[in-house]
Image (cartoon, rainbow, N blue to C red; front, side):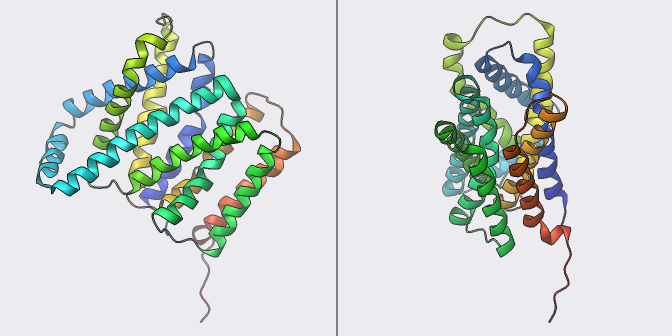
Amino acid sequence: MQINKYYLSAFSAFIIWGFFSLALKPLHDYPSLDILFYRVFLATALLMVINVSIRFDILKTNLTIFKSLSKKEKTRFLSLTILGGFLLVMNWYLFMFAVNHVSLNSASFAYLLCPIVTTILAFFILKEKLSFWQWLSVVLCIISCAILSYGDLTGLVYSLIIATTFALYLISQRKNNLFDKFIVLSIQMVIASIVLAPFFPIYSGTTPSASLFYILMIVIVVLFTIIPLFLNLYALKGMNSSTVGILMYTNPLINFFLGVFYFHEKITSAHIVSYVLILISIVIFNEKILFKRKVIS
């Protein structure tokens, strides 16, 4: 595999997500569920405006393509798109729930587990082949996660559930490649909004009045939701789910360095060993790209 536009798209998406805490930390006084509501609703509204105003011709073209499909192809597209919307909102909600009711570590740990779960599920569901070095990379990741999860079984269970929902999202969208990815993302956001709408009147808090809340929400919606999700979906057009999954480790690695050097959080020897193993596993998984070996005949 060469470093191409799909590889760079996936890599860029996870780099962007790695800095998400910079926008999220200033909102720590607001309920996590409220942040989820506004994130989904604002993202949906913005995507609809963009599609209707500046991408209307693309929207019409894709609608024409959809009408020309067979009943089986339409059902497949709708099923995968709806499933993607449900998995996204479920993943985001479980992540927020873990932060509020389990532990921040369990929520962060989920995105260390996610690449492993994605790689393994892609192997069994999509029949994506892995080389010896890529399997070795997966084993190193499992060892790293085992070190970090030692003594916290409850957190591990929640982390596995969160990781699995996003892994299934990546795998399902790997097969959902008939239409413009921006439109697919828009439909998924609409579905997420429909799922959340009945809960908003019951579980939402007081309407925020501070301008900083809405400024940061716009940043979260545009920079940390729409752009990386689109890049992620686009990358899946030309890359294996397992490769996208391993690149996902960029996200927690950036979080780790931000936590240590920017937020001055305490680290243990277990953290250092685990993250060094993760760095090694990323290098090993991408060894064909990083080290161009000559084949000896």
